[in-house]
Length: 140
Image (cartoon, rainbow, N blue to C red; front, side):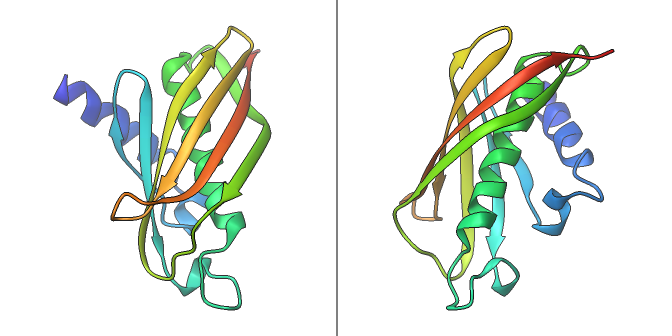
């Protein structure tokens, strides 16, 4: 199982090259039977002007991990995954360190999927609670 987990994480991290995920230094760090976790450093590069993590960067992290989880759990060789709706409630600010986004499936339909993505700090405190809806489209 550990070997399979490492292979999945390696593939997830490889598809980030030359994308927004690389720009934001998002790294996939853990995967399980029903979840995928990524981390992102909180540096001035992802701050809003007053020096705290920008909500848009948080949402980009959440959508990235939820979409990657859809690819893993829906057989990305057969479908293309797109985010169709995302919402976020930001409940705590953070100035430095890392944030962790853990995407867990709420509904796994053939066409649409619903993900809950909790973004936490290094102490496990909730920073943002996000909900992502994805759609799986057949590849042509």
